[in-house]
Length: 243
Image (cartoon, rainbow, N blue to C red):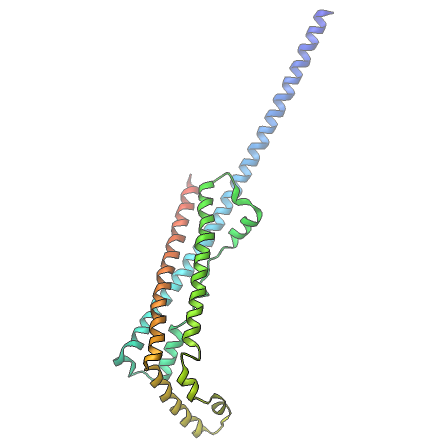
């Protein structure tokens, strides 16, 4: 009986050990599968963020080109010899083209917003690069929004009534709109064109334009910086994905 009892306990203990080992193996496999899924999901998110960053570089490249062109047009407006040869229509067109807002150049944070809402930025994989990404979409993103807001305020000043004060004071837009006689309209336009051109040559308007010109240079430098750090972030992500 003692031998049978001993054998029975050994059998039970063996079964328990096998069950425990089986459970441990199952847990290990489950953990391994979860880690693999999380790792693959992290890679997917990194690739999506990289696409957003690539879109940012394209956006800023376009903005840089446009701002550089605008600054070139400004130079012709501030050059007296060139300015005096321009027609009023071409002057107004140049002003309209060059003194524009840059609010259309926004950072694409769609993927980051989704990850923030889901809490995935706490992923244990690629933790360092996700910290860098978090920094880019908080500090850099918010700073760029401040630049856009500042640019919006300055452009409102350039095109506001106070900037074109003498134009607004001397041009009767309602009369011009209602008058149907071609000859009268033509004469009015000539008269107003003279007023506009003289005012654009005035120190008041030139000072407004010059200030906007300098502010645009500041925006341009910031835009170059935004494009550079977006490109650097792409390189960091590529390096992580290659590991």
